[in-house]
Length: 297
Image (cartoon, rainbow, N blue to C red):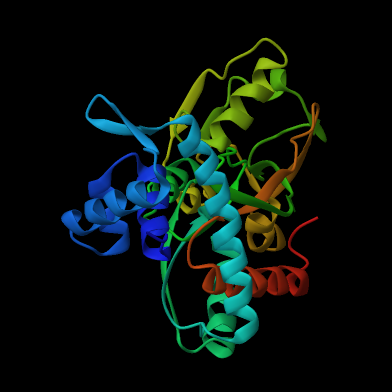
């Protein structure tokens, strides 16, 4: 009996999810159909690539080897299809954007996608990177643009550049030319929730001097954080590009600090096996827009 691509796809997604039911959902097939393909795969291979682990499945040693081979096979197929023009860049693609990044860049990105790929249908999620990344890992998104993403063997990371960030404060605050943690520890601080990149930046900066802020107001929205800082409610860390209009109007200052706030790296992240032509089209568009906007270092 010969192997089929359908059997390998059933194996790949079952291995990715650890579940036949979830693989069936991803492939838009009935669960018995996926199970039948897996049995056919076992017959063709002459060994079992999975073993039971509680209610789920885990790969055997030979199954792990087969998964590596699938990565190579699917990558080759995608290359062949792209060269032959077998796949047109049309249909829906689910995208995730870190909110601070999206606030500046998303309008131009979507406009360019509409012009260059009119058959593409972006479905956009905008949130913090900490909220978006689990959705990507659950394959509810096809491609995401994230700050400080984690590494994952099933996903590819492509660095795009670094986003300049700094402390920002309303001009009503009487602050020195270069601020230290001691200068602002008693002032109200606006932060994204615990666990977010924004929170880690903020709390780590104060911790460098052995301090914690006296008051932290949490806000899950980057755009609202920017608005609250603009209105003088408190101080916050966010991308300098988000402060440009308020800075030009004289409402806020971008603060020099010691220690400095590190620039935040932006990455594209997407499954190694998935809708690659569509992801490539979006990624190429985003890179082009960022270059023209001079957004990232």
